[in-house]
Amino acid sequence: MRYRHFHYKGTLKTGTLKGILNMEKLFVDLGKKSYDILFSDSFNGFAKAMSDINAPKKLLVVTDSNVEKLYADEVNDLLIKNGYDSKIYAFTAGEENKGMDTILGICGACIEHEMDRKSMIVALGGGVVGDMAGFAAAIFMRGIDFVQVPTTLLSQSDSSVGGKTGIDFMESKNILGAFHQPKLVYINVATLKSLPNEQFVSGMGEVIKHGIIRDSEFFDYIEKNSDKIKTLDNETLIKMDKINCSIKADVVEQDEKENGLRAILNFGHTIGHAVESAYDFKMTHGECVGIGMVGASYIAYKRNMICLLYTSDAADEEDSVDLGGRRIIKKKKKELSRTTQTETKKSAK
Image (cartoon, rainbow, N blue to C red; front, side, top):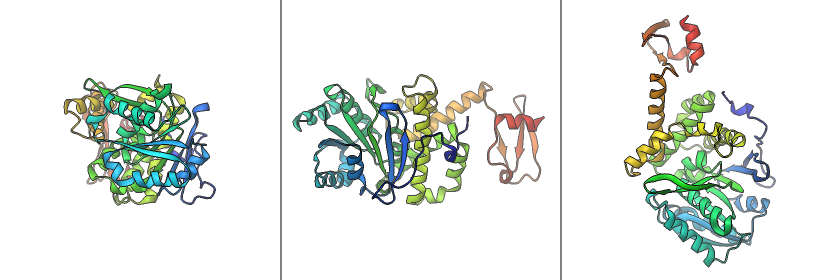
């Protein structure tokens, strides 16, 4: 099934929040666990967003040593100036620290800050930070609220939405965890300007995945706007993040705890996680997902579940080739950007 962003089902509500400029909103409809995803190009609206969800005054900002140097003071000072009793807890950055020792450190910081069941954790950082801060929130005092403030493309486009939290254990990725939905996701695309290029490329692995699994028009949008994406144009990044989140939110709304449809979001991840583990997490997650998508597609092709389409700029007329007993149409690239298996078979006839 293909979903176009502008035909998004029911819960996509965009516009500016009252009193705040350049802020757009997407609503994730999960009944009592519903929340907003806010898109902006600064942190200026964050305190107002926290007030809108009636956030408690006692907060712990959880981040890593990389993000701490860039944004932790800015966010924490903003919260303090707006009346919050907020502290920062930073752990050493890196996937190798995504384990129980760090979780216990976060929980220890919660106790030292005298937090209770009405307190809240703010996850400020990438996917590792969000996964661990969310897991700590899920288990501290049997569960407290948390918000996601993702600062990487990978977390903004994927991991901050949907409520999956967890840690690595015994050389297995995300083997311990919980489903724990955030109360708010606040996305500031300006943070992507401080992201190392390899991490931006990693995030694009998940972005492209969403286009492949649910929205071919979004896949085309990425291709056509690649220059603006590379130059980190704020408007383009907000649109890209919003489409990504709308695709994931639509899936999560229908299957919150991965009993069926949500498994589609794991495209490329079975092989990808194996590659991550085999290379001791020295490759980025997005790189491994990209390898996984190629591998999964090849397996599907060998099992006759998908067919191939060849394109050629040089070809003046369409022609067909025989590949493994199947008739495959070859057309000029300028005439064909994407085709379905059904369309290919009809053309071959």
